[in-house]
Length: 221
Image (cartoon, rainbow, N blue to C red):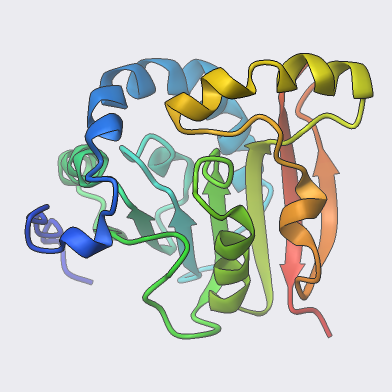
């Protein structure tokens, strides 16, 4: 594989690929980088480790952001990261260059319309992404489409609590969080409905966590 750093992308060259111009995401980069290790890093490292990724496995991370999840992956795989925000991808490219990660590449792409052929990846991951896209069900459909039959899907995200009291409390913050770009009322079954996957595990990393970890097998026989 080439050790060259993936080229920087000109945000003006593909305006249709970045419909919200990523201005909000650009402004959020410093806070995102500061909060990520404490909020999500430990869960991602443990979940990725549990996948037991094979040599040269083709892995896609949807919503790679600034690349703060990238150290969680082993170096013996081939990892592609995509994100809508070119500001965040610029940070990821710097991280890749600094660490000489020739097994990783990133590129701008819409999670709801992936530019990959069917059945291209052995594993597809998405961390805290499904609740920030415009159409979560469409994103999940794309994840399943590009994952090979028998491949693995790993999702970590906040989903609406099955406890009615907790759900009502969290839902009350919905007007605020939607202005910031994410939903608090997304239900897991809403995004999995009728998809050809088998949910193998669904759990919270601890009883007090807001986040759910879901592991599934894609298009099982």
